Image (cartoon, rainbow, N blue to C red):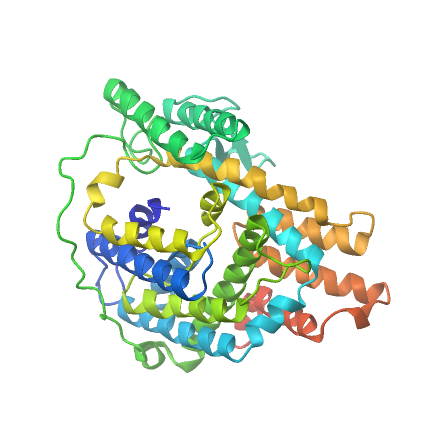
Length: 446
């Protein structure tokens, strides 16, 4: 998960000509890296101690991207945006403490919980392939109906992508042979290979070199570390956005953050719990209410730290694959995040091409959850199928859950089984319908 300390500053960090807000203020990338590690470390430890699950935390990628777009399009400042994250987090905690999140979690049918887990497996495998450059978007100028393609012209053309492919095979062999720590060994070995290739080829980042690395260039760091700059902590404006852009616009932003975080985290915890064998026969996690309260506080901590909302990370599945079953794994992960604040240059050596193979291997493990889905019943099969494919196709766990819920409710009602569906699921499906129609609704009300 260490890549988030490098990636989060790229998403929300900026400069005088990039990611600046309406006041031309931006979040310095080095400071974002420090608070990203701080918030992740704090939340991992808290969740491990209180919830006792091996579900690690860090700044959510979907939410930080939403924040970056919001700041650019809605004309609010970064301080105000982080204030809205804090508000969203408080609402999440209240909903969890009231028992509503737990009730919704338990209302999800077992088959859909299996589909969510399998969909997350497909999603993280797709993330790995995209991050490594094995799967690339086909530019619209190509005038083709194929939105994505394999490599360049259906061929592996660069050393970084080849290293990713070697990494997938290496980790696959280690896991197949049940080598303890196989994923970590694979990441280290692939990183060493990347550094050797880099020392010979001297590639840059893909932004400047078509043959280059997608994120980190695996060069030896000039320095190992230093004291972190934590001046962004507490630099937030809780209610400023409401006066700057109006109550309605600010409320819509909070709702978008809330809905994304609410179901993204719920889906991730469902998938991780099932993969770890911690869920009961109905797919429910013991003590989930307590866990959801702590999870909601991740947005509060992330917002106050100005590092974006913190949530459960699907990459926790790699730790679960190695045997993590208790909060102790989370505590260790949290301590390492806190230590990482002092060693930013060191972990920047690991390219995404070396870490992404782990996501593909873990995705292969999680897709096995489809065995618990009754594919002979189409009212189950279609919602499960759409849940699974929508996550990678829309690049969102929450979208996959929403599409699956809506389809499930409609098909069960059409089959005359509407009484077997929890009333909460009808409400949630309606909320998702409104959410998916938010653009026409916004246009309607100006």
